[in-house]
Length: 387
Image 1 (cartoon, helix red, strand yellow):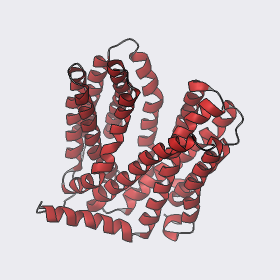
Image 2 (cartoon, rainbow, N blue to C red):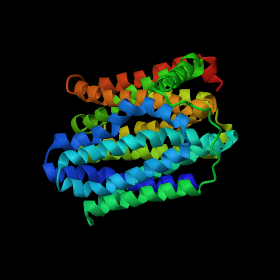
Image 3 (tube, rainbow, N blue to C red):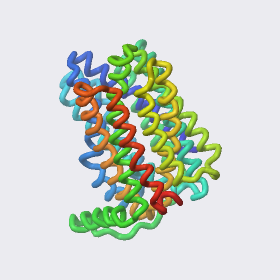
Image 4 (cartoon, rainbow, N blue to C red):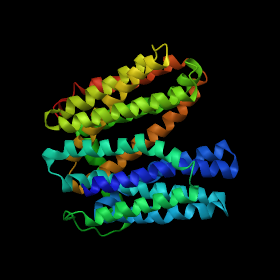
């Protein structure tokens, strides 16, 4: 409950900062390129440092890493308005540094959950975490838009800084006994050896390898669908930004409904079928979007997409936590974060580029196939099907 509460407060602050950052940059520069760069900097550190961060996480107390990351981000974000008044490049540096701290925090959060929750309760715990995060997306962005109409961006960044400190305090208060870790000499040779151990475990564990391929393929399709959704709303349906907002909202509401359903029925949900069929339904939903003739018709498959996404994502997280030994979680999760985030970022760019050349409806079908087909293949892998 302390972890859940701290994360809810921190993520509400993050939503505020995610709106305040582009507002600050846009007001200061008037450049769409500079504004877009802020969003790109949130993804880049995962690609650059995700795998290496995993090795570090396995060497130290995970709670200590999370508390340090929260405190560092609290200090960095409160400095942003001051930096903006003197140097915009410094704002980009701060944004990159904050995202880098998150690279250490997020895998640690996923890895620490099995240490504080019994195996039988992992699915429900992941569902509650997903529900809380989804609520912050629905409520946080809406409140952020309202707040920034009445308060300065400086105040917004101060609130976000305070939210990180609340998260750090919750982590300190959390009852947690760190597992005993093997001694490490700390040399570079040892560091790379440990990294190879994590990669070898991922490569030789048949279920994890197939699951990783499924997720990377799914991230490619989902990443491409993000710009496609925008162009579908604007160009195909002529619904403007209101239609795009409606699509994103129904996906979020669908995810919330699905995560609550998983939390209620956690002990009766098969992880193997939930993650494979969840991805299959996601892919099918993307393909069905292409058949929609209006905004409200498209909202139905988008809502189903959100529900299926919650079943797939929560089951995948639980499967990872149960399959990877405690001493290897940081490395394996770090590699997965790197692959997933890198694929997503690249596919967003590719999806946007292809939308200017090909029919958006056809591209939606292709994205759906990319998500669904590897998951269908996963049903024929016993380690996945019986997870």
